[in-house]
Amino acid sequence: MQVPAVVAAGDRGAAKAIHGESKAFLAVGELPLVAEAVRLLQRVPEVAEVFVVGDAGRLEKTLRDDAVRRELVKPLTIVPQFRNLYDNAWETYRRLLPGAPPGGRDPATPADVEQAVLYLSADLPFATAEEVSAFARRAAALECDYALGLVTAESMEDFYPAPGRPGIRMAYFVTAQGRMRQSNLHLVKPAKLGHRHYIEEMYEQRYQKQIGPVLRLAWRLLTGEGGGLAALAGFGRMHLAGYLDRRGYTRLADRLARPLGFARIERLVGRVLAADFRLVVTEAGGCGIDVDNDADFDTARARGAEWRAAQEAKARRLYGALALPAGGAERGAIEPRVVPGGAP
Image 1 (cartoon, rainbow, N blue to C red):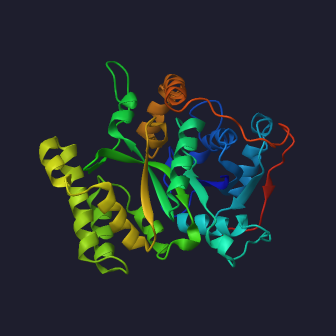
Image 2 (cartoon, rainbow, N blue to C red):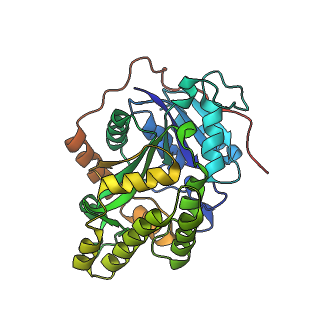
Image 3 (cartoon, one colour):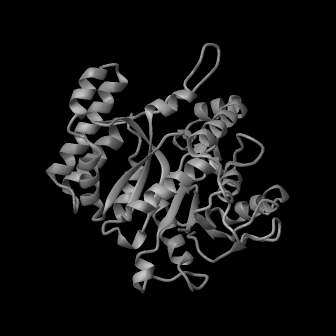
């Protein structure tokens, strides 16, 4: 199975700047983060072609750099960004459908409706091709409408502070299966999501440590289509368990989360989205680290080389070596193309 991949590199809507700059164009290693994401996807066998949606002018300049072009073996398309994350995801999907004109088209056939897309964010400095590939394989095997990636808290311990060295601690969801974090990987059949509008709302209210976003999303779940008391109760239990866990009440958090097994979470989220929703865990952990604030970005830069080497070794140990798909283009022969799109 091969699918198109979409790298979300937009800086509108709920996107956050880092040090006043669009994070997609900041560098933790040698290249800007968006260039690293594109380069990584060249090594993922399940990815057939790559689309990047964001500031088209800056993306074209960045992705035409020789350091990126010489690594390209798959078609690369730049899509000018739209108003927000939801529009970026949907409008890029319309442009990647087979036979779509440059401005895209709506899904019109059963094959269009079943078209799966791998979505990932641009700011994943420690993602590895092996972990992305493992997620794509496992998600595709479920044959669902939306597979959301998770990593375990144990896999994230590699990034914690150490004596005399800075680190990153992310917030977790507490579930019956343990503490989890979203991995920034999504395998989605966009046309099969009955309530697609919730995606942007959930993204905008995603900060678990801030009470305002939590309350706004809770109200939306209570009053919105596909929500109701059951969705609100599950959401409230999960966030309360997370709150208690962050304050050291781990036993109480575990007790509260006992009813929150993956199957129940999948049913609740599936009901909200009007889709077959599933959770997929990968073990390496690198895909769970994004850079959403200045401090985490600075830490990622300070320990970047060390963490990158450790993640690559860990991913190879967990998943084995990757075999590139046959039929790739000669390196350096592909020129990024830009299609019409975007909103003022």
